[in-house]
Amino acid sequence: MIITIHPQATSEERAHLMSLLCRMTGSQRPISSTQIANREVIALDGGHLDAQAQNLLQQQNAVERVTVVKTPYQLVSRAFKPESTSVVIGKNRDCTSVIVGDTTASPVIMAGPCAVENKEQLMETALAVKEAGAHVLRGGAFKPRTSPYQFQGLGVDGLHLLSDARDETGLPVVTEVMEPEMVEVVAQHADVLQIGARNMQNFPLLNAAGRNSHKRPVLLKRGLSATIDEWLLAAEYIVAAGNPNVILCERGIRSYDPQTRNVLDLTCVPLLQQLTHLPIIVDPSHATGRSELVPVMSRASIAVGASGLIIEVHPDPNTALCDGKQSITPAQLQKIVHESRMLTHMLQGEAALTHVA
Image (cartoon, helix red, strand yellow):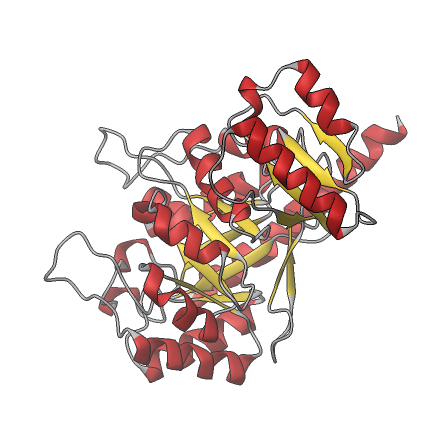
């Protein structure tokens, strides 16, 4: 159940509503609210509230409307917010802002190295990414690796290099944060906080990202074997904590076949567009683990309606310290950017013709 607070509600009316909710739910703690689509809302597990209780809530002066959502995720549900959400990246920063989820625009392409290795490698890649027509620079300063002996990233030094790259190119930056205690530090340097697949259900991290004081959007990757509901509930944590700017990222789910790193579940893109108002992008690099498959799966991702792509690019993949096998070259990225735009224009044209017919 979602209660939308009336924008003209007085403090006394709000206090009365909060007291009523505490009595109804048996909560010993104050009821918290969050901002969604310029409205203050309260999300509750309303399964135990009967129709009489719902009617009583609707009659309160502080209440604009009561929405009953039947899914376990509420704030990210399209049943609550029918219109699609657009997330702005790079707002109030000295870079070119980008909108993810704008159905009238070309897909947003995020590209860059798996890991920030050194200044020369990052700057070369960043300039090439911009030249190729990508919109956002990706790069890992902190790298969660399966083996403790593999390159773990440059840490805070990598964050400073990413900031320098943004200053040099004007591209906003997305990078991963792994610990709740590091959210504010990473948010100082990054324009998007990425939560990786292994941390999708790190609930303290989700809450911290939702509360980040810099109001940075969050890119939430799907867990290694996560269901759609589990993924959306992870997003619900972030939104319920106060951050409505969440971008979902499909990066493949684990299978038994070793030919590819994961199985890219493109079915989830149109399915999620029915279930949630949040934008969805696709990571064909981690999904396939093979650079030769990245271009074709990029095209497939755009064809099913993804709002963008996040791709690993390295000037010399053979020497990459991390995930070189799945990294493409800047020249390949340029072709993907061009094909994505062409495919989008073609699909938009077909949709327009169908509407006219």
